[in-house]
Amino acid sequence: RTRVLTGITTSGTPHLGNYAGAIRPAVAASRAADVESFYFLADYHALIKVQDPARVQRSTLEIAATWLACGLEPDKVWFYRQSDIPETTELMWLLTCVAGKGILNRAHAYKAAVDKNREAGEDDDAAVTAGLFMYPVLMAADILLFNANKVPVGRDQIQHIEMARDFGQRFNHLYGEAVGREYFVLPEVHIEEQVATLPGLDGRKMSKSYDNTIPLFVPREQLRKLIAGIVTDSRAPGEPKDAAGSHLFQLYQAFSTDAEAAAMRQAFADGIGWGDAKQALFERIDAEIAPQREKYEALMARPADIEDILRDGARRLRVQYATPLMAELREAVGLRNLA
Ligand code: TYM
Image (cartoon, rainbow, N blue to C red; front, top):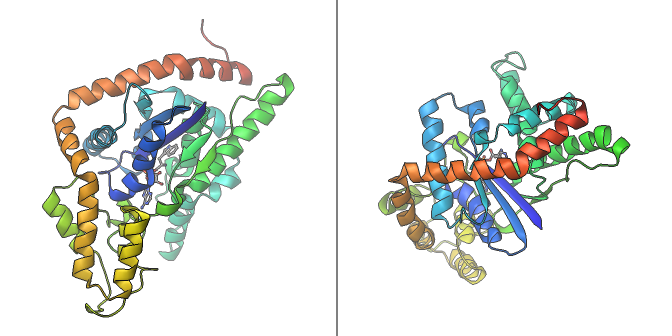
């Protein structure tokens, strides 16, 4: 069976980009008969960016409720919180010891931090934590611990999956070849072509760090207001507009069928006003997420139930996979297992 795994960092409120890029395709894929799915809340990853414990907790709850509201069935998939599987950080250390530092130097997030420092005339590594630097190794541990072969993510994460392959391969080579074992399956990235990167309000990638997100489950009227705030140019109604290159159109496309998108492309060419285009976008998004929004609100009112679901998932997952694999890996590298 194909093993599909993906995670979301618990550093904020889930937004349309997380939904279209990760949650919606993941929930759909989890319904296939021949897959075993692993979905988790990346709270160890959150600590890299967020040093506010209440925010990490709140975000964990919101993201868990989002997955469940979007139709994830916790008795049919593995659904868990990363930090409930401490084997993750233990494996991270084993991988750290085979990961090339030069490869990590090239990680996008780290390079972006260095570039920013250079622009500001600071030392390259000013205010860069080792946590940020090691981010891809932690992510590799998430994936390799469960031998996932397919990792559905947005385009921003492709490099991380490639690094996970690299670290897994090095480990296999160093420790597996002599004993004829492949400890790790090498994961493949899976990109939803149509919604590879959802733009935010300002046209840049929708991202918590750009403060341009549309939260997934804001109340209806707030959703309308946020969509009305999408940045557009000053072309008036009646003036033809080009769908290609319009982030408003890209958002519309992510929430509509091919036929609906084609009709909107034509409406753009015919000069639809921005106000009408935004109203149409609002209606598409609201029609798709309204049922989930109701479920989300009900779930958020019962945090203890969510907690039970997460703990139960992690407990079973450790017994079935994480603990035995970790014991084998400790042995492989020459560490002992306490009986
Ligand atoms: P994170 O929390 O930044 O994003 C979670 C998922 O949402 C996707 N995404 C988007 N997709 C389309 N358009 C956007 N604007 C957009 N913004 C975010 C991301 O590509 C991702 O799929 N490091 C990961 C979490 C993680 C993980 C893993 C993922 C930790 N370990 C192991 C897969 C496997 C992250 O920060 O995603």
